[in-house]
Length: 486
Image (cartoon, rainbow, N blue to C red; front, side, top):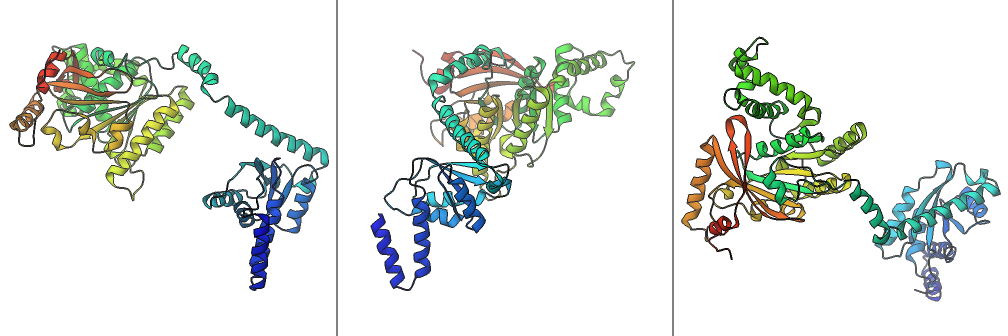
């Protein structure tokens, strides 16, 4: 609508007895008329005499107008055929004027289809009426400098300017991987865990996924890198008991190893816990405690919760670690499906989707690896792990940089829902869970920046220890799938 059509509309409204509406349109045109220059325009919130006087004083040095939020919306939405300025400064006089309503008005105009210039909030130390000409001129120059700095920052945000900064970060080892303690897994992951990456590790309930990930976390902590372990199912004391159990096996595999039950049960451990105890188990326990305190325990922090820990809370703990210890920790979520809901009205799947996206954002924003443990449903009893195993939430499959599934060795791919192989697979899973020595496979199903493949694992349940048995040959993989390797 050009200026002539606006005038015709105002006349028609006057003749129809809608003079108030006509005045509103006239006011919008006046405000819009003050905004036709390519120079940035200053907007003073309000339409009192004091506001208009402030706009008049300011207009001696730069284009300025006073108006209410609704008037600003109308002025931007109305079409007069004249162009808008390159930027708008919403003046926050003496820290007393609330600019929030003006920004809401701009959003409203944008939703109505209006083009909105760049918007800046421009606070003054004092009301404009109390500023002399030199102070006003200096303030305007400062605002102009802010625009120029923003333009310069945008111009230098392209790859040609950023690559040198990346090169410096790479040289400083920002992307050095953290070894997991499993050489075969590190070989597939090109050295270990990388900053800004989300690793999702899944398995059936009670198969041993927590123990596997805890062993990785312990290895990272023992190497001197902080770990934030979010325990949403087991207690911190139980997880530490798992670690101590594994350490006793490492210290004295033949005679000194202790189970979690022995470590946590005062009655069962009374005979070797005494300070004067000279049994092999007593010695191994004391040595394990000492090793934990001097090594893993210096860098492992476990926080507990059941359905009450949000990703936002985890982000806060990460920021504390960065602030108080100077480093970003590796984050472990045990496990993803029982993180606190992102929103109560969302479905379980939608909440997992949202949380996975936020965990990926956390990894990227804070330049750290995140390991998110996932529990598979019972369908995974019948088939080898694959990407579909993670489909309880589509975002796990798509947002994670690396997907790793754990299943018993010997799982085969059924060809149909009625294939007898499904029953054999279920029998294999149940038999595996009854063993104290479990033969498992960790299958790297997706690796955004590296290889996929399978590693063989031995899981000794009494002392919560995994052993790396090497990368599975491609010939065996092909045989499992019923194919051939050329």
